[in-house]
Image (tube, rainbow, N blue to C red; front, side, top):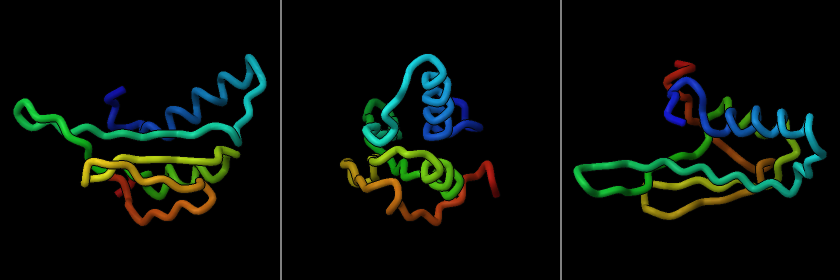
Amino acid sequence: MNDPGIHAESYVIKKLKYMETKRKLKWEKIHIIVVRLNKRNEDISFSMSKPCIQCKEALQKTKINLISWSNDQGSFDSCKVCELCSSHVSRKYR
């Protein structure tokens, strides 16, 4: 999924809502992990993939409990969706 118009968080929420039409989901047990990879020459590393303001708001409208994202230091940060803070405005919304 490399469509810059659709963020991973929005895409997965859309897919989960569709899946819910087929079977019951336990939203509170879902843990979303968002990863952004950066390729320079032959080196691949993690980049910041913390949700933007719009994705944060979309996630908080669901009952999803946990989210993790890659950071520029090559590791992951996590928190409960209800505690997620973001001030990042995506290029799509500028």
